[in-house]
Length: 230
Image (cartoon, rainbow, N blue to C red; front, side, top):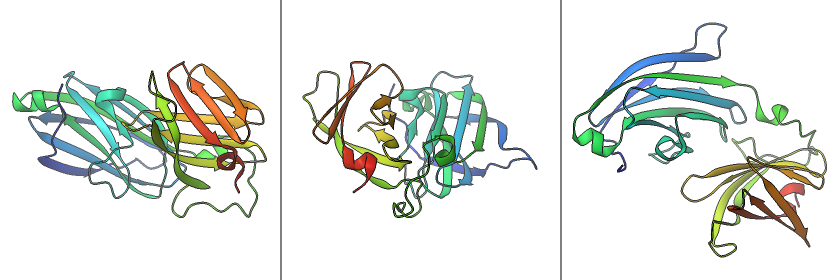
């Protein structure tokens, strides 16, 4: 499959019925047509998206506020279901499209798209309360953002720099959201000397650096300052 192009973008607001926090939409794509479904949400809320297309070459991406195409979720590599914590206040777009090979053949796809918004990640995470002096990055749910060393597979240690955002709780508790270059994502939960994530976790600490391995494939080096502040 080849990557899509955004030649013909149509934007449609997502509207929830009174008292509901999710909406189901039925639509159709043809050729290089792209349909964005837009909705406003707050940092820390949780978005859930389910996409059921009739054509296997149809996918969706999730675009954060201010994006010109950069996505926090890419369906063609990550699937047709997504649940994620939103990093900032603003307008999000669920972008539906056909991959370029299908678009060039002027293929079509009917689809059913379900989008939901719920909760607030800081309370859902059960981290406890961070000190009042630990301010959040403006417009986000995170107490700090930046980059940290990471690698995947057989790459040398610290081969890449991963974007991160951290939600801190009581002392020693934190939820670190990491995005590997190429959109692979991981949520690491720190509770004292215990580290959990989406998969089999091996974690050790040398000095003030945590080394975390997921499924013998993902590798992250996380300074203690990310978790505890300072």
